[in-house]
Length: 353
Image 1 (cartoon, one colour):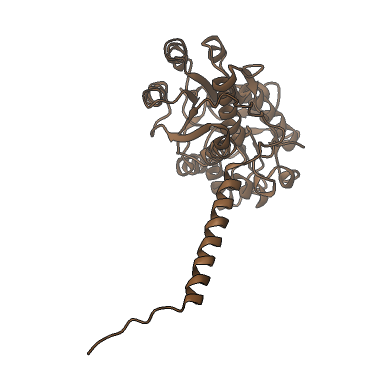
Image 2: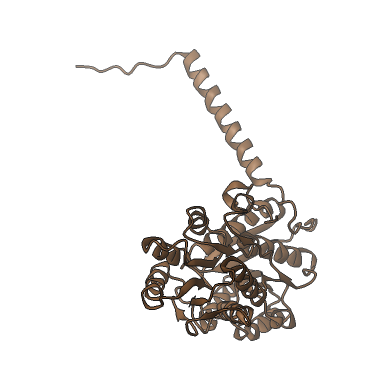
């Protein structure tokens, strides 16, 4: 038996070709539009790259709690803005542990891979010696985020965009005192780790802010290493061991774990949970009443602003002015959550009240 394959009519073939061509044109137009993303209003503006200088930028972060989601989004949005201007921004996960040696290893790796701009989460002043050498020897533009350290500027860094964490800790204490009123009580403190400089600044600022009030911390605090699960367990321990507990203060990642513990114990009204970062999990906890408040640190801006500043330095030798820039750090509660919830605002909107 002979099988004959029918040939499509010329008219049909022409129509199919026309549709394919139209689809290709639409795809090309969509790609062109995707490449031409406008800078975000209220944030650093990328300079004109008239010489066509190639800026290859690495933003180094980690992935142990939801804070990183927003920082990564900032870096990726900066890539969208810069790619039509000769810039490329890559998000690089530095490892499992956040400490000076791990961060230095990630910075060195990025330098070896040919990045001429590097933004990193500063784990301590020990990172600055490496920064100084890379700037001097390899002419790499380098910036930091999350914690303010004078050594970044002293080493020749382009930008250090971070929360003033001592001030944030003091403000968290003031908000708690205001919320508790004239009541005496204890506060359980949960930190990332005592060697983490940002977490420790927040802890010390908070303790200093409680001075002279009727509130005091249970002890120096316990470590949770940014784990929501460990934070949940630590909060549960405070709830069962401290009858006069009025609050739990979490200085780093995973504070919603403490909110879950308080909710499970049915103590949302008597124990106030205070944490950090405008993450989806924290916002949800504020909305359901299991968390009293969180302090933001413009998590998106820590990725975006640093990347744009590095681009401007590579292309036009500009540095941020000033180099050390305190990040926007507002306190979110149920009263203002709708104004500050990132999910209700255009991507990258600068937080404000």
